[in-house]
Length: 343
Ligand code: SF4
Image 1 (tube, helix red, strand yellow):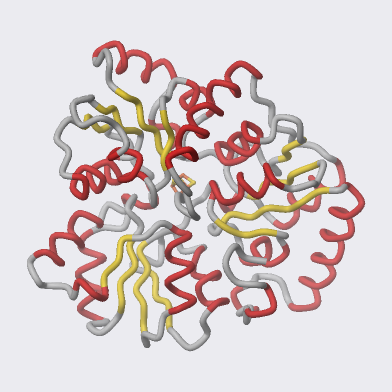
Image 2 (cartoon, rainbow, N blue to C red):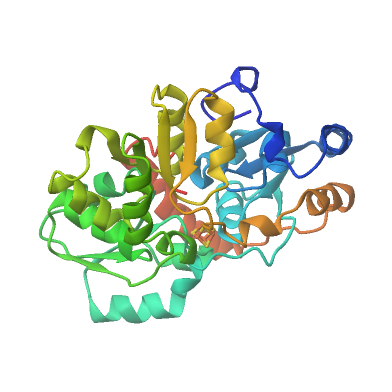
């Protein structure tokens, strides 16, 4: 099922799968049987391959999945996503076993800052409040005052007294977006980026908008194109009422409700499967069809099955690091509903 719409309400575009219908049914039946046998819940990120999104008990963005993980009665969580996401699930559910089908599934954004680099940055800015996007390692979260998602980042920043400096990390595009919408000047932004989102360029935006002049536009704030899209909106070159900057969760909700003929989507292309499943009358078009995350695609149907058969791939977070990281995540939750924000 998805986070917002029951499975029964979805029309799965089976042609997006690489398996035949018969292969999918056989594989999916085995996945569900093994999950039941293990007492496991299978969680899938929106950027996973279609088969995994469809077979999972829950599909959504990273923070939503972590909250599902914390609330489930299941003994074991099989996390189909990247390493920092499985770590976050473990941080919030320290007593559960969290399995990641391939530990090499990393994240270029999370890897753009280490805990050591953050400690050095903090030493240069004594007294500053550290705000970290959820796309960070457990060790970086442990050095953080408060986490944020892409949907609540502005609220998190507004919750910090105006005269206090802020270190925002690791995503420069999300940081620039937050700085713009809050009008805050005392924010230092780490120059990190996700190679997939940064690869969606202003040139892609211009050519796709020219080819689809009536389309609605959904943009994830990590995209390198966000600044140029917002510039085009402020100069009246794009209709403000048809252009929205949304988290992946926000995109899923907007897509389900859309009555537009065409929607241009600027984020990792895996999410198109969710959007098309939820709304078969709108055409969802990627802003850049090559925007695929190789780390997300490392979790294959075969690896998921292997994990369920063997129980291999447990995620371990040192309890002290986990406790410090948990404080940063809980500080965010205390500010308000994080929604289905983040990646
Ligand atoms: S799409 Fe980018 S931010 Fe997301 S997991 Fe892949 S590398 Fe990381």
